[in-house]
Amino acid sequence: MKTTFEVTIPVLNEDRILEKSVTTIMSYLDTHDLDNWKLAIADNGSTDNTSSIAHELCNIYPERIRYLRLDQRGVGLAIRHAWSTSESDIVGYMDADLATDIKHIHEVQGLFGKSNVCIVNGSRLLPGSKVIGRSLTRELTSRGLNLIMPFTLHNNFSDAMCGFKFFSRKLALDLLREIPVIPDWFVAAELLVRAEWRGYRIHELPVTWTDDPDSKANIKRLVLQYLRHIKRLRGCRDR
Image (cartoon, rainbow, N blue to C red):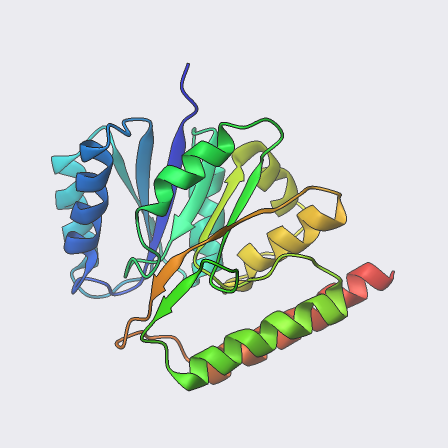
C-alpha cells in the first residue's frame, strides 16, 4: 500500500496565481504518476475570487483537491486546520507562488520511503541549494533569523522559514497539541524546534527557490513575530 501525501497550499487573496499554480502542481503529479499525492487549498479569509477559483479546481480534480475555508486570517491557522482534517500519511505545505521548485516533491517522496524518516525540511542554506532573484533585505533577514534561532533555541536545522516542510501526520498532530494556536508562519518553525527537542532527526533537502517580486510578506512584521515567538520558546525550554 502506497504512502499517501497531502500538500497544503495556504492562500489569502491569491486569485491572480491560484489556478496557474494548482494546475502546474497537478500536471507535474500526473506526468510523474504521483497519484498518491493530493492538495488541500486552505483559504484563510480571502475576499477576492480565490474561493470561486478553488471550487472550480475541486470540480476539475474532485478526487485530488479539497478546499477549506477559514473566516479568520492566519497561515498558521490554515496549516493547523488542513493537517488536522487530513487523512493522508504525510502532510506538508508549499507556498502558493511555488517559490520552491516543484521537482523536489520526488525527493520528498523518496526520503519518506526510507526507514525512520518522519520530517523533511526544505532549505535554501545548504550546499546544493539555489536561490534566484532574492532581494538583499530578504536575504539578510532570513539569514539573521536562522542564526538567532540556533543560538537561543539550540536547533540544528538550517532553514526555519523555507515554505517547503513535510511531516508524518501522526507526529505533526502530536506536536501541534503542544503548540499555542499561532496564526502566523512560525507554527511550522516551532514544529521543527519541538521535534528536535524530542530527539527526532530533521532531514533537510537543498532546494531551488525563486523569489516572488510580488510577495505580500511584510518583512518588518515577520521579523517581530519571529522574535516574539523565539523569546516565548526559549522560555519554554528554560522551564
